[in-house]
Image 1 (cartoon, rainbow, N blue to C red):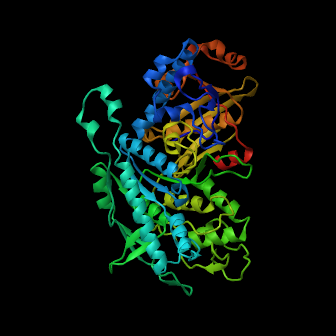
Image 2 (image 1 turned 135 degrees about the horizontal axis):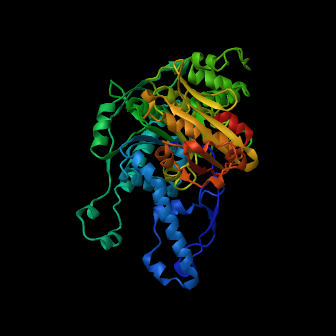
Image 3 (image 1 turned 120 degrees about the horizontal axis):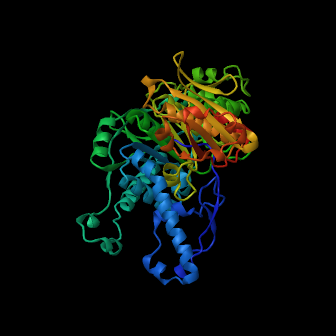
Length: 558
């Protein structure tokens, strides 16, 4: 979702007396949950409404809390409506690594949320990972997993484990998605044949064509495969028939072989082939900056800069970027001449041995997927960030990196204004830059297509938006929204609590974006003295949410 870059928290009392619900204070909007088992009221309301019987049983002291809970639920639904409407009909590719799926409760919660997203009209391609499960099976059989870089060396034993793990997980996911709704609860709303449907349609098959990775620099990868082609047309057919498409890490070669592919390579190649609206990656933790703050948003340019920043701090990370993203991409980040601990260039680190292994692969081509895994993670989620840049450059407009240990992460990211993860966008704030002291302009191919001014009144903790204009031929394409969103973030970074503006003809546009009419007295005194009352302007104001963040975060986002 398109969203602001910071988030505030407020405490809501969840006590409801004898209503049977837990007592405590939980954040209604998350910066980053310290405990993954705690959810804000908006997310808990999605999973279950307060029971009518429980609400009827509460005493007088508890009834106020129940009404407050109902108000929170109604408020959340109204807040979520623009996102529900906007996401309907979109295509999302969701990749869930094996580390997340290893916990049964987490798998249940994710699939419940996937079912809800599907019911809200989103076309979903689900790509589950099984790396951890394969490793566990191999160790149980007395064999150590072997990696070179992001790829597993798949011998006969590893291939058997891969097929067993992938098959078991596929059946388990299909079974859980086939679970129907609770009939006794639904009968309260009358009989309907749809209440008795057996669950969601799940489609899987040989959508993935692969080829052997072969021998690279003397290393025989065995039955490890690389993505050759994604059958996008057949996937779209299943999606149009209201099915959730389940993609496996197992690909099939033109000679009839089963090949073990990298889950991230499959997911990213699928997102590019489908030109999905979003790629959502569930991780085993949040993406943080060097000060421990959650990075909420990055443009493609800023993501490049973060990768360069983190890669330059480590020879291994620089090697990793060069090997995965290719020499031309590394050169664009200024890493071409970074010295290495070994004279040879383009090395990976083996997860099992810690040794360096040379890679000659180049993933600059937009049609291919992007392999992630195997490496010891020493520079945050560098590999996932680099994969996000690759996918955005290949035409996917949004990539979201979410902490999958937070219950309801998908819902909180997609249906709240600020979300709980990191979004990388290929088009947000494209061409926006400051001009002179107060003016922001949007430039495209050497021509200015939009502009506005931001005048801060720091003593009054507010700022005025003025001279807001978008070229007529560019209207209706989101340029105005991006520009307004940009100046809102800049004002919030200046500790402004609200924006105000004067307008004669554009009131409806600003009201639909959260502004409300206000009396003249609410404007700063310094501004009131300079108003030309002969114009008959109307005054509008919009509250800004406090956004705790570090200066480093501001640099990343702007």
